[in-house]
Amino acid sequence: MISSECNNERLIGFIMSLMKDKDILIIDDSSDVRYLIRRVLESDGAQISEAPTCDYALSSINKIVPHLIVLDLVMPGRSGYDFLLARKSNSRIANVPVVVLTGKKDRDSVLQAAAFGITSYILKPFTALVLLKKVRGALKLTSALKRKLGEEDNDCKRATFSVKSSILEINEGGCRIEAPVKIAGQVHLDGEMVGNLGLTELFMKSGPRAKYITEGRYTNEIFFAGMGEQHAKKIRGYLKELR
Amino acid sequence: MRVKPIVLSIDDDPGFRKIVEAVLTGFGLYVRSVPTVDRFLRLMSELRPDLLLIDLNIPGANGLELVKTVSDKLNTESMVMVISGVKDKELIARSLEAGANDFLFKPLERVLLATKLSQFIRTRELLDHGAERKAINDENISEAKLDFEGQIDEVDEAGIRFRSATLITNGTVLKVNSELFRKMGVKDGKCMITVTNTWIADGMTYGGYGEFDGMDAEFLQSIRRWLAGKAAG
Image (cartoon, rainbow over all chains, first blue to last red; front, side, top):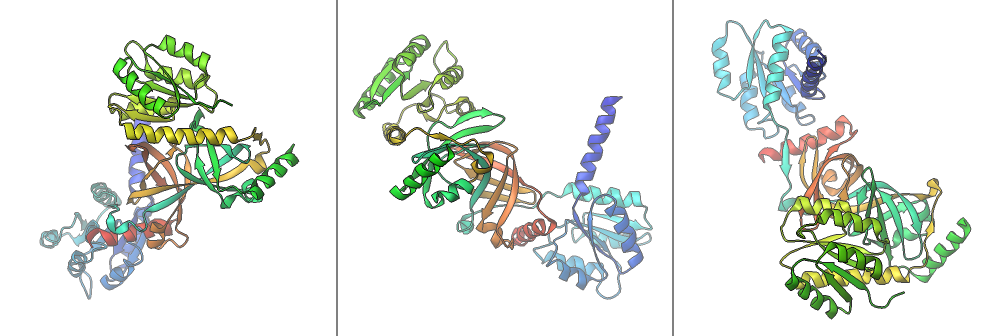
């Protein structure tokens, strides 16, 4: 009994996470239909944006790249087919899955749309359940956008990571700190004490013997390099005051 | 203060012990090498060595256990270097966690050993010259922001894959500052991540994956715009 409840919860969790915070763009000329779809999908956690025309939809893509597009095939002006054609050559949305809406008597149009690589279709009139099923199914098929950084990104892939630490001991040669990292190489410390002592301008390097304490925390040795007599004096004076 | 740093080494291979003794003596270090754990531990309490070289694959003994025992007994100025005959990353990772400071693979490269030794000697000198350290007990002033460098290797909608010489504990929340985010249109170029996975990338660097943590919709959309814009271009 308990285990089946757990399984249900996990299943619900999975479905919710599928839809949660996903941006979904609804393109339909009927505001009633857009409202209906918004209500259903929003209740599942999705972020909805609406477009009454194809042109509006295409310009909105410059701001928000959707995870999924729900598209009405028959619209006055530029039709759903025009949008599908434009999508093919728009790198931003070329790989975004599309679920099309079409009238019940219009099965041929589905076949036609299939040529553009739609993910699935919904025949009008539809129920909330069918809509959810189709949209979830389409989202499940899509993988997250991902990009490996290559040579062309060499100028920008360096990163500085910052984490909270606490200084346990200090003298003019260096200090011992506690942090959830085991450091190696060059580091930098900033904070009230280091700031007061004017140490932020020094080079700091990790020393040997970082030691695992508990719960993923380590003590690390840090050496100060480039320390002048002025800095050293300041530290000695400061430590005397602390006593 | 001792003038000559003392090195204690354990290895069951007599040929290897000879090489280690030759190289280390050449560096002006006092070296003793032994084949068994018993003698190793006895000499350790006798000599109080500055550097310990531990072979992880001693027959009839658990190398990891030895590293742990030794690390718990040592004073903080001593250093432990483990040597492994097999390039087993898992084993190295666990020995680092057990308290080792560094590692080497067999066959031993003399140049690499020499580089590591000179590093060790330098840091020892620094430690010897340092006066007694003052303990800071006031939490308000002891808190400090620690920055270290790394590199971002991959970006997806949910987070980043990165590399760093620093090992980060899973679950740690970090602030990341990179030109990359600025390029994506994030004004301050910063974001928060929670590290969810770490591994040994190569030699001396660790890889990790961090999920974006508490970032607003605008940030996530900037990432998506950048990823989508690049995907087909």
